[in-house]
Amino acid sequence: MNQNKLIIGSEEWVSLPDLNIPAIKVRVDSGAKTSALHAVNIQPFQRNNENWVTFDVYPLQHNGKKMIRCQAFVVDKRVVKSSTGNRENRYIIKTPLRIGDQTWDIEISLTNRDSMGYRMLFGREAMIGRMLVDPESSFLLGHMSDDEISNKYQGDVTYKNGLNIGLLASNPDLYSNRRIIEAGQQRGHKIEFYNIRQCYMKLDAQTPEIHYRGGKMLNDLDAVIPRIKPSMTFYGCTLTRQFESQSVFCLNKAAAIRQARDKIFSLQLLLKNGIEIPTTGFANSPLDTNDLIKMVGGAPMIIKLLEGTQGKGVVLAETRKAGESVINAFKSLNANILVQEFIKEADGKDLRLFVIDGKVVAAIQRTAPPGEFRANVHLGGVASVIKPTAEEKKIAIKASKALGLDVAGVDIIRSSKGPLLLEVNSSPGLEGIETATGLDIAEMMIKAIEKKLRWQPIKAD
Image (cartoon, rainbow, N blue to C red; front, side):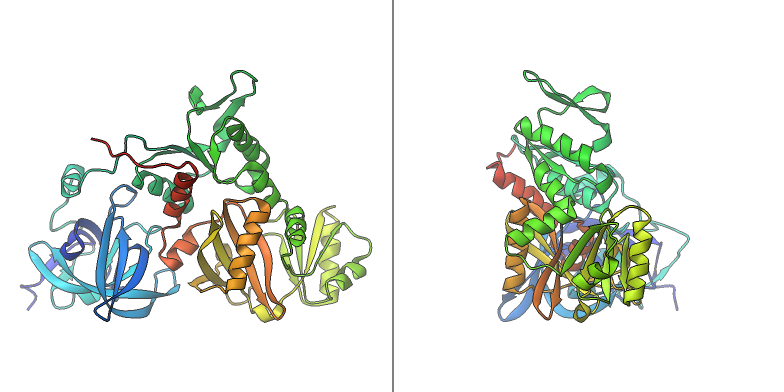
């Protein structure tokens, strides 16, 4: 009964001829119902009163230069639960798949799989009645060498005048950093990762220099993208400021990054520019604990250590007594304390609006996991696409301009008083928002650099 079925391994090479994808390595997963394809810049459109989508596929893992622009008829749009437990509303397309010497139509969901090990997941619906899986084997239908893969794809995009871009950060393996490098390469630029700790500079009126480990000179960079973690703010901003002084364009200047990192100063600037925030109290080991609590309307309240990041050092005090206990505990650290009114009606949700060059390019709603009040993806929060209101967009743009940021992640909470600004992040992560929206935010950042430098591509011969 099974003799006519194709036997495949746990990973295989397939092609999607109607999408012009000649070779893509798939993870064979009989536990997944629907197949999934890595896609970004997913945009719906109408053709003959039918629903279609255009999207970009980077079919080769860790290769940001090979990109295929695709379009396909939409057969459905449904909620799909990922392997991480997140639910996502995805477009479903139907397209021919070729594996070995066989071809048939399969349904594929479109989603950002950049954080996954494979650009395509091959689910059981596509296999039923046609194949058997040997999970101990791989590439039973043939492996492909790097040369064979290259021959199936057109050459890399190269330009005579591609920009020389440096990414200043601390971890080259982070999703955001990998995506930015891929996007820069795909746009035809030379982009390299530079660890902030391993950069050093020569301060001199005549011959200022910036060096990287081993003595490599970085003076010839056209632009840098600072992605500075909080613990490296002082040195990272000093380094960024040195690039600025040597006429290298920085996508976020040092002064803007420092303003955004100073939570109180940034709130003061935002208020000065007429942007509403939750009522906030600030003190250094206060003696008048009760008055500080009264200042923000009493319990429940949020209490933060000023130096905290990504949700650390943040406590929800549901009663006045609990608030007093937390504040007194923080006082023993001789710490700066921020107390803020708790917006109960937000119901554990907030918005992240991503701003690039004065424009909101994407927005998501983050929902806190059960038992948690902070809608933070680092704490297990779930991200979903949302359409922000005109007022929310206005606040995000106004906030990024007030702080002088070219790129910003603006966090907003919806209250009974209207939208309130929580925080502005100068190095916003890309994974949550790219995964939820399917948009190529990294490419938008590279395009912002091109626009600032008035770069026009000249193709290589």
